[in-house]
Image (cartoon, rainbow, N blue to C red; front, side):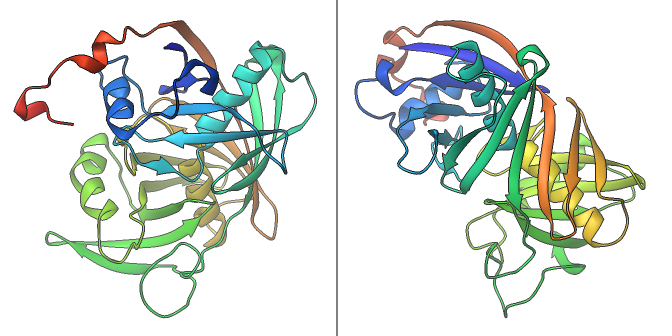
Length: 287
């Protein structure tokens, strides 16, 4: 099985073409490929390009736990870079269909930089979705194992919970992220961002990604966190998002349409040996 690996600010994805797979990838195969000890290792798999009736291309985004993500900003940038590398696109805009909606992408900077029109951000509970009466989920509170957090929720085609913090750290995200991801109020689970406002143009986030865990960067998380900062009047509409893996820029319109720009790096390509999928796993490594 052939593959190509890229990363966007340390958030790495393996791209697999449908033509190189006998059928579809099942959840166990996805888990094995993404495993950093027993497989290639990645924060997810991009499965495409696929045919679309409405867009130039279609993309499936698979999480390391075998579930499917609606949308991924970093995944879309990496997919765009792959299309550029294969000369399927040039310095012109093109559209990509995802479960979370269609997006417009533009590769520039000699292929190293990609801009994605991420679409509209909504804070409405019924769209995210968040349990309870219909409302914009802003500055609400939750208690997680004895700690109270102030949070906002948003969707950019996938769900996000943005925790407002004075300080953020990897330890904070790793400890509370999985508990918030699976909190019952988030009906489809949620991505979690721990947000610190730096100034009117800069924010810092630490990220726990639904289905993937702690990660160094995320495009959709950056978009959601920036939109929350702008919605609350804490930042201007052009925001640099600082993450452990690097920075992204988010531009927001008055009606909360978001445009993301960031880098992509090609890592390697190769062929997976099918022996990887035949080996029995120890019981404590069951997938």
